[in-house]
Image 1 (cartoon, helix red, strand yellow):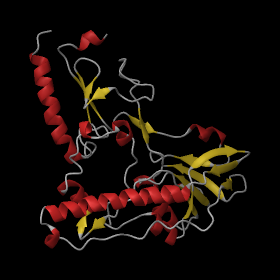
Image 2 (cartoon, helix red, strand yellow; image 1 turned 180 degrees about the horizontal axis):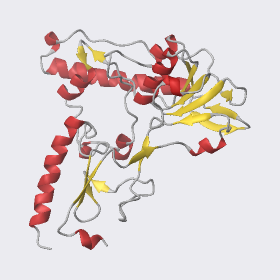
Image 3 (cartoon, one colour; image 1 turned 45 degrees about the horizontal axis):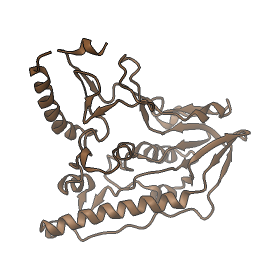
Length: 297
């Protein structure tokens, strides 16, 4: 009963209620293929010998592809929509630019398509060493790049043919963002404090990208599903979940009295899922909570 929450508060924190999001086509993968999620994966030695198919090319997918390829295993990386960013831009960490230019602070009520903004993949960034790990670096290291994993039919993995379009879109968005950084540096007289503007080589598309891969011939022995995470609010017991399994909320104020959330994607700002981004959200939610508790039941 939602009324039972009047006078009490429930705070939901992102992370404790997430589960790997594995596509339903997993059910059609031959039983001879061992499947892993980022929760299951520990290091390449835990994988069976032989080729590895990694599905997903966001932050986790590209890092796993790099690590597993370095172990000597053949790696195929299935790429769908992704966010490409350089680790370092004009001599500064790209996250410094995101913060200094105000991009991280863009509010949820300032974007045209909030649902879209909240569902964007994580950027292709690696923590240490602070180098750019993108699809060009992976292909140069011997990782085979294929399109989005679309289906499994007769024991064969089928990939979409829109790889070049995905590359072009990711490159376009990256260059627009770099242009935003450049404009901020100019308008705030910061050009002398950083390096000159840069533009990076477009993502190189393979001359012929495989559209299918036989999962029965023994070349691929395992699949790592780096396909993100989905929220799991089954324990909550409140009618506040939409048809896609997401919490209904307005900037963290959940659609039930006294229930709040923190740490969700673009909760109130683009940086809401970062530790440094939770502070501003928490302050505003505390203000809302104080008003809520001061209101007579």
